[in-house]
Length: 562
Image 1 (cartoon, helix red, strand yellow):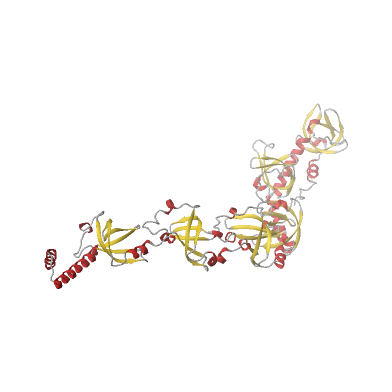
Image 2 (image 1 turned 180 degrees about the vertical axis):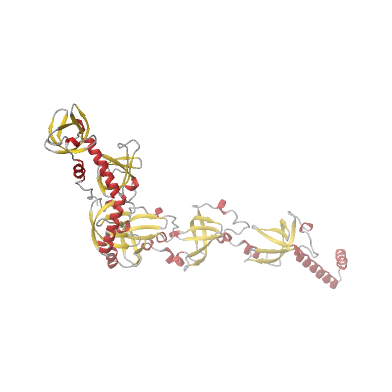
């Protein structure tokens, strides 16, 4: 398109129309003049082979040669000598040329000379016009640096004579309109000539963040970044350069959007196919860590071949929050091929598989009831996690912290992550890889010790520690408490516990229940009194048979009769 221009003979035609005999010359008339002489001040021309006129020498940037013909405009006569103007003739002819191009819609060649606000100035043979930046090209133009000094074809879209006369012109031109027309034509040619799968040759026109635009015969196709090379994350400028001739394959043609997708990598062997032919699941390869993400690390196995090492495959035992905790970009590691998805072109890698799995020997290394020392790794609302030897982790639930009441309260103040603690294995599920630990199990259960020393039915003395609506708690020693339920305080119905006992009272009770599962001791004053009464009656009956009575026995009997 850029070699299109206005008819070259336009100046000759305009000059021919203006030719006249000397008698017919008048001010402002444009005629051809033959250069006959050039002196220090003027260029002398002969306009009719009979009379000569002069032109100020400073009107010429480049002096014409003697014997050449130039167009001149009659300005005035001085001492009978015609005075002509070369510049005004050129300007007038240029105006006529621009007006004719505007009216007829023809194309003019112009040179971009400088950038102005929101556009550029273009020189059309001595007359400048304005081209808005949006009409300078099909694509958005942010800077005119590339265009300045170059010649292009333009279409005059506005031609207006100013109010100040012929010297005031408003000329607006567009290159975009011509480019769009040309693109439409080239688009039709491309879509009729090529089809998906064809290989074509083109020239790199522009390199952007989204890809590389390639001119394939006047029409720009796009090579997306993923289609530049089999290797991911490449810099387009490391692969191609502006104005470079490249051979590409057409991978997409959309007649509706008039877009053509190109591929450079499709003309080279697919390294993934070759990799899959040579590698199998379970193979161990060496690779380079190229990228770290929250979910894992990408490892380059070969040029153009990368696999994903998921964060869950980094360690058998450690809880890794981010791959950077164990890997760094650029490091070389050995990995195991866990799987290859041929359809999705994905390769799954393993790192921990190259290390001994401590969970394989859980039953051997952490048998139930064995003791171990581990490091507290974290504290949660339901217990503390302890890292055991070999890196495996077990859980001490709150109920297994201690035997004493409130032992699991405020774990954060009692335990600190990183400190060492001794534990006992209390349960184990090797299949689910779960280890249950206990701290209180390191000592004998005080409740069982209490059961041995105070079996159900025995009597004991204790101190009331606190009163609640449903009874009174009694300190029975060894950090244990027993409960006297309100129904077991007295033979008669008790409405208020405080009417019978108070905190700090020493009471004698009977042990009526020991529940190991609920870690509960039941006590009773009522049952103790009943036992006492029965014992008293039994003693009295024994005394009657022997015929022996004491004054106290008689008094007690009188109470019973009441």
